[in-house]
Image 1 (cartoon, helix red, strand yellow):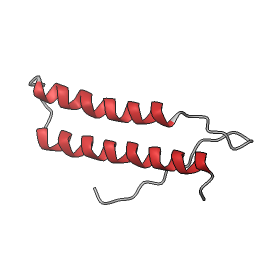
Image 2 (spheres, helix red, strand yellow; image 1 turned 90 degrees about the vertical axis):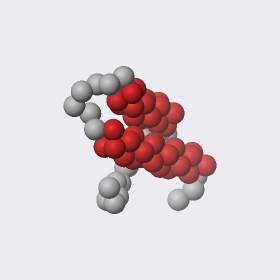
Image 3 (tube, helix red, strand yellow; image 1 turned 60 degrees about the vertical axis):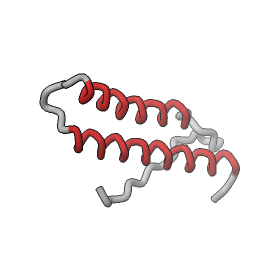
Image 4 (spheres, helix red, strand yellow; image 1 turned 120 degrees about the vertical axis):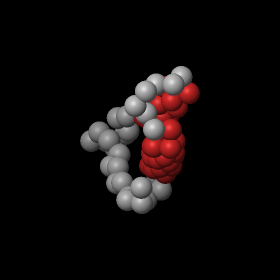
Length: 77
């Protein structure tokens, strides 16, 4: 997965964030954790390597969202 994803921040007319970075990050990480749990529980039809890669990518995306929201909150361009 070498493609880049661009995620615009969701802000209101005053520039305030409309989506909590913590909530979005938590959601992305919990999806990955759930997949890992299902693999560990022996869920059929899930490839362990694919789940691992997707979980890593979700965590990276969550990290990028956190960084973008922190930069936005601090007034960085």
